[in-house]
Length: 399
Image (cartoon, rainbow, N blue to C red; front, top):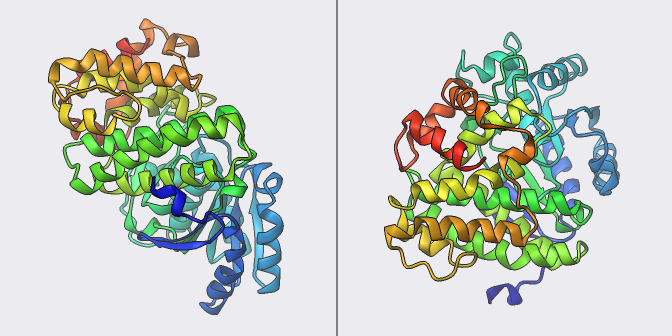
């Protein structure tokens, strides 16, 4: 396999719409990034993070030193949680405005970057709120520069134009997608990911698999999104067991991070559909539910639903985790069972009932899937149609 010819300790610059510094030791590139943004007149930034990971991984030690060496002032908003909320974003915007921040530097998983992207927009639209942004009352076309230091191998947000934030008051978890929020720079350093817990390792990697299954089978899928999907699933199936067996395995972390980054590019092109549209109501109603776990629970039912329409594509891209599929549309049950067997093999056997959901919740979840701003757009590009019955059946089959 081509991976054997890669020196994981050589930091490469991978150009998507974002300049991504990728490889073991890539965190040191923050010195170059800090020098560059200072030369562009950026002398104050807001650092978006959670409470612990940005320090526990060692990333902050390097970042803080680089900022100080380049006389870039910073203020740290460290209250971002998984499934960040509009409250977090509004609070961070106020902090950034009061400080005079001219850019956003996010350190963490997808949540600090997504919240940071939202802050970056609102710094350019000071009369707007996060609620207005995520209810689509205006269409932004500008944001302050964003730098994303990624600490997980899952979301792909460090290299695409998407962000997700929850409005707890309405149980809404919408997604935005604007060209102005592609990060200027990103860092993917596998050595910063070795402290991910086994659960986090599983869930973020499953998130990447979901990204490409959807991007390869949506109504706007392209040869590019399908090609990336096939390789992403192969890499995750190969290296996730190795990372679980040895969390310090840098080669495994490297190729999982690469898979996640390319999954982000894949759905930047092919977009997403049912699995993400239906998961967002789950973690909006239960914010403690890990996004990746919610996706895992829904994935077998989604594969079963869409197999008839996308049998050839799914047989090809799922081959590393469900061998033996021929692309015959009658294989839907076999494909779904195979996906569930793979999930169980990496110790993610849960169903919705295990998360506290019941048949009585299906109508509410279905309603949220259609009323949450933006999610109907994802449902509309699902290959099996946009009826409420399709959505309801996926939830029911996931119980």
